[in-house]
Image (cartoon, each protein chain N blue to C red):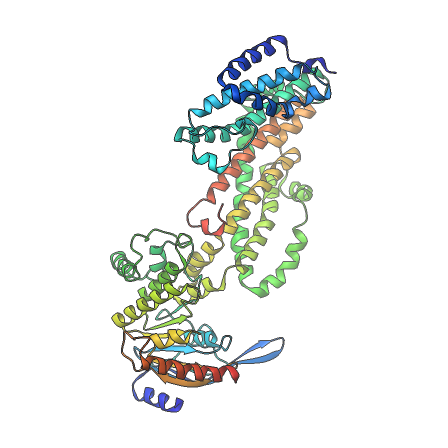
Length: 261
Length: 359
């Protein structure tokens, strides 16, 4: 099943390709393996969710993809080019506290846009302020915004860079249930409008089934790919339909296996 | 028994008349329990303890009643509720504040501002009274000090010395700021550099800047330069250590975001590193400037021939003019207060407010 999914993805043109990626941290002279032999291909414009038990190395994998950590072995390549460090073409959205508290909403969104002309920058900021529905808060500082607004701001700042890949590290994990639901819908809306490759880490199976084209299930530490599961339900997904529940149950069993492993 | 503690007759009469007026304003059903409550006030303690004659207790109580009534009458203009207790004896609670009109709020605000001034005025008054009764050589009285200040002003010395002291503090502090902060950030950023430098810094830091006075004079002679050097030494190490630790305390996520957005190193420093440490640096600068102001006085007592520190030591040496000594001390305190207020206003800048907890 896993192998099939990988092959079906590689038959299209791959955006991101990971070959035999392994990662081990050194602690107290001992080497602790975190990622083991990860092979994955992600095509352009795809929405991928990484799920797995907590502490399994999902975030580490995302950081490796983003170039924040270099893998002990193996290669991550985007568009055939090896990833050697963080790159403004690929933006990572952090779980929380990712916005700069010393900049206003506007300042945060235009943080990476210093290369653009003033007019272009203004236009871009206005566009994304509108997209994440922060109109009227352009000159507000993050401390005066709610947690959900700050996460939306972080997403806006990432999108304003016009990245080809968007990494999201449990971006809505710290939010309440209703805000989370709204944020998911907004993310889907934005993704459908702009069609970027999105790689989304979550521990919430429902979130994964609602959002993703494919779901990568990781085993507990050291993380291996346990399963790659395609969700072929068109958006918007009805979360009480039998197909949705089938996918969800399938994933829960897979993750249950990952937990017991 | 101290005779002076008993109020002069005219005062008693004045308050008694007020009290009669005040009691007259009360409902007859109210004023008896009110009186009883008043009797338990601390103000009647002197009477109960026998410091004042017992019969004075009733006068004191009347005075309190009167004062309370006048107070209430005054405040009722600004309130819609009755006072459960005399207002001047306690803090208003929140539910009462709610009922205040705008005018009442303004008066309360003014009271809050005026209270410390009243407190100082009372202490200065006490100071004058105590000095008036003991005209020895303990301390000059406030009036003498005021006269001393007037003398200094007339000779143009206050302005001259304040400017001299501020000049040294400014240069010493700014030089320390401009060298210690970038250096501290750089050292804090490179862990290995920090491991190499830290022991030396920890060794030099506890040396009082005053211990450098002989060396300062040896290197720079008696003059502005050595005073500036001493202030520099006093400010350099605290700022260096703050900058070093501030770098460690930058949340990793800001650094990662900075790396992600493809900033050039110079941009990274100016747009991520400096703003991230700014709140701590401002706090440290405020404390350090206070230290600089302490050091300059000491330095001027030895290393130069002008400034507020020199004024103090010179006033003492040249003719035991303790009025000038105290005047100098007060000026030093005032300028220090102003410096601190100026630095504190930096903490209200919008882009650093996140670094301080909510008030």
